[in-house]
Image: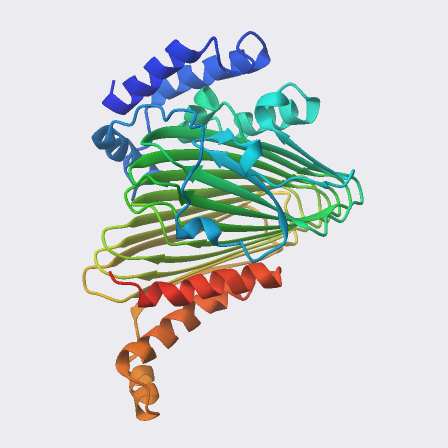
Length: 433
């Protein structure tokens, strides 16, 4: 057994009696997850969906023990303030544990239920989300690891036909060296509408492993705007998995900007429960130094008449390595499907690299599906044009880089969140490598 897996197994055996739901359905599900994890091991390059990222090696080298349940003050780094200018309810998690005294949840309306997951694991809608999601993702060992060791997270339910006009911000902080595992459950009932922001950042520590799983259930005719800023420490390892299920005529707009983590694997699994669902996943990444960023999107069109779009753009400098893997599966009865994937990468140095693998698997004939990928450098012609207008070369390069990323960020439906992430992207180019 590899070192990291042995450490995680020992943590589970030592803490299993103290984990939430130890004696009930959750305890049984955790035990099955651990057994599956021990059999399959941590993700590595011999797995097709992980062929460009060796999480097992990264964790073996780091040897992360479990991060403590941090109490007391935390010192947020700059990334933690990404959405500070937006009026939103806020839930703060430190090392995977909810910190109510650091959060701002006063005045929540009746149609918006927000809980610490450790208090509501047994509530029927939470249990249903965890069980069905684990069944769909049981082959993902990072998800099994999360289930085995997660104590806490956010449990959010937006009531039927409720428009949550004020956004909710989930702020995930790491303040101690070690591993933390956090699980979120987000449910929008029929006709509901909400905006949820997420931030991943450090709070006084560089070297840590953060493993998050989020279940998202968007009910019939409901609409969720989901905006994520990943600004974790550049020495950290981060894995974030989202399981997204859409009902009839549901809308999901997922938008993210990733600039952090030494090694990051961010993955989305989208499925449609009924006709008319629409999922838009727009991803921007800006990496430098020796950062490794891997984005994986799997979209399962199992019913007819649904639409999906995955748009990925990355800017890579130094010796950074980017990965995009997209897989759209159109099943035999999923006629009238519209599934599209596009991945573009911009390399700013000779040491940077990008691996792109968009994939369509189609078993229906009445569909509109397309995919594409491009990898290139800044246009010298464009740089020359800007310099001929009196702009120095560095400024010209910065304008081209930010314009490249802005095409993704412009798709964020929430105006203030869009402006916040565009400002971060603009500052990224000016930072020292």
